[in-house]
Length: 397
Image 1 (cartoon, helix red, strand yellow):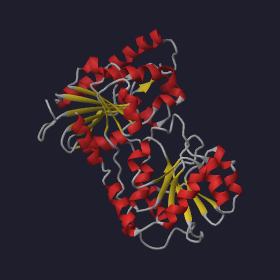
Image 2 (tube, rainbow, N blue to C red):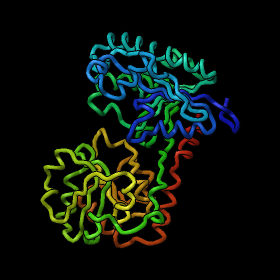
Image 3 (cartoon, rainbow, N blue to C red):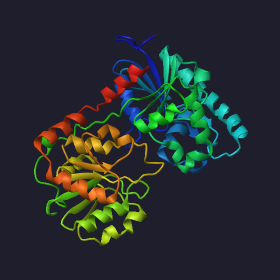
Image 4 (cartoon, rainbow, N blue to C red):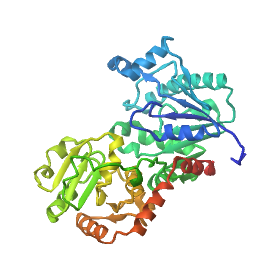
């Protein structure tokens, strides 16, 4: 069967994130787009035993306990064609078990409990022709292809999960095995699709969706925000988390020291490494703190050049940088660290391989900006819609 026009499927999405995840989420966005033409069941992660003991007052755990007690419904309709499930079960806490045989034994038990709840919901909704879309949920969903017997089991990779210490003990082994037995794997970056292809030849880069509708210069009204309006031009800016694990502190310090006539504006929460860095002693570096999402376009509008000096490590190398789409959607000249994942932006972003190159490319970005380049950046970024992302997934199915 091919996914031709008019073909309808019933998607079952399992994910590491709940449908109400506050920071926004790829699988949640895709669920809403899938639901335009297909029926979708979004399965929230069940509580595990240790989390119940340690975090009983956490709203997410409390919600799941209320479902178990029958105080809240397990299956909820979100809108036409879209439902969410809170499984009425508790799973064993196994992620840090080092013994493979014990882990696998308990993981089979967890998967059976998880699958049983999904089967109940699927039956209640009258789903058939199921596609399981597993958003990196490598442990809880490991046996779902065997237990649910879907038409297709798709593994979705959007972060290099096994580079994070918490996942390494069992994730390196389990993720590779799950990708191998999936019918196909899809990824939001070239790096991650190549990673998946090591284990499964049916692995595809499907792009990344992004809602950049708010990042539009035509929507900016009034004066610039008060804490940036008086900062002298040119302004070289960054918006996002200021964490040493993800951002190159040394590159930022080098740029600020080399060009005291430029002003660096950094917007976002800081970790201890950033709080204690030399950057706080430099007169041309401004930390403006975290801002509400609705205000970010107004700050970005004040940048002369936007930057993403990503540090290269296992965690960051495969990431799709959604902030780049936001920068480009407002036509901003952008300089970023060259990575395999950034290759799709090479015609619209200046890609640096060293701190010295950052200085050179920022200067180039300042001097050769033009209306034609601005329009090309905007057009490119606005093509990265969630609908386009979903269509790529349909194509590879």
